[in-house]
Length: 158
Image 1 (tube, rainbow, N blue to C red):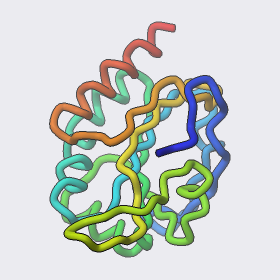
Image 2: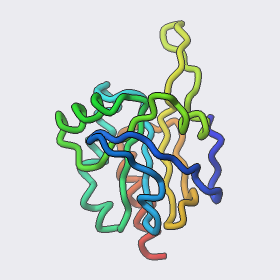
Image 3: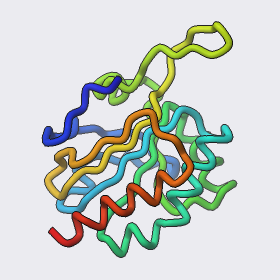
Image 4: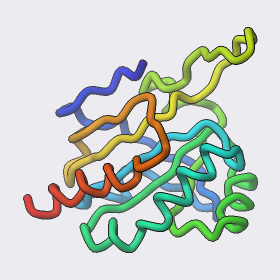
C-alpha cells in the first residue's frame, strides 16, 4: 500500500530515462503529470498498460498533461521496450528503488507461494504544482488509461 495521499506534494525525483538523459519532477513544473508505475517492462500487463497510455498520448497532450512511465528497470531495457512498442512517452527507471520506497510502492508480493519484492502497479495524477490530485492503487489495466485521461481532462479546465 502506498503512502501517497491526495493533496500532498509528490516527492522530488531525478531518475535515468530510456534515452540516457535524466528526468526529474521539476522538468514538468507548471504542467499536470501522470506517473504510471508498472512492475516490469516487457511483461504482458505492463506492455498492455504502456501501449494503452501511448495510444492516448495525443489526447493527454491536448489536455496539457504529460505522461511518464516508471519501473525498476535499467534505462537500456526501457529504451528497448519503448522502441519495440513505439511508445510515445518517456520511461524512467528506479533500479535502486529510491523513489519507489519513498512512495511506498516497493512492496512484498507473492506468486505461487513465492515471496519477492516488486512494484505495486499504481498511477498518480499530479496538478501543475506537483500535488497529488488522484491516486489509483492496485490498477487493473483494461480501461485504466481512459479513466486517467478523463481525470486529467478535469484539470485542463481548472
